[in-house]
Length: 225
Image 1 (cartoon, rainbow, N blue to C red):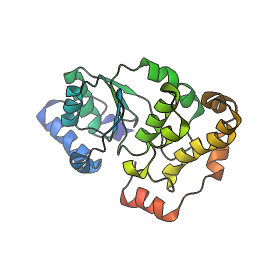
Image 2: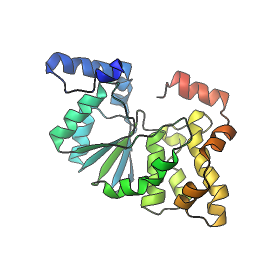
Image 3: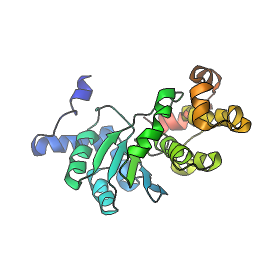
């Protein structure tokens, strides 16, 4: 908790800001994101990316982005106060929609997604740490619920193209949508009705199996959050 509290406050002066940058670049692996932000346009109204630096936020502001959605939660990295400052400076709303990438999606979170999407001032940017898993899951939900797109189109947001490994622990996100395909879509049941009445997170956790090498790459080498 002390690590979280360290960054859940305004930055006080240049030294504090330098420490936040150092933490973002080194402890949070942001140095790699300076070279590649994994930014992609999902629709004309939604972008997805990895954790943006202040310079990235300035660029997105020039593209017309009005809201940034932080999927990470917590205040344990220097990126948080830097992001908050940059959003205030550029007149961008900063909101949170906390997701996890290695566990069965929470039913109440999914059921609340439609109202959340409708409340966004767009264009919006959604980000997690690497822009691969939670950003892909959010984008898939956005297409499926808000845009009423087909399941197959939505699931393409969870792809190796974005750095997503479906056979690692993060593949439980793919398994969630595949469960809907079998138990809901195939029977003509609407997605949110399936989530509310049929979806069983505990069973999804029990039945999902990971691949050794995919998990090794995603969790040990890439060091996903």
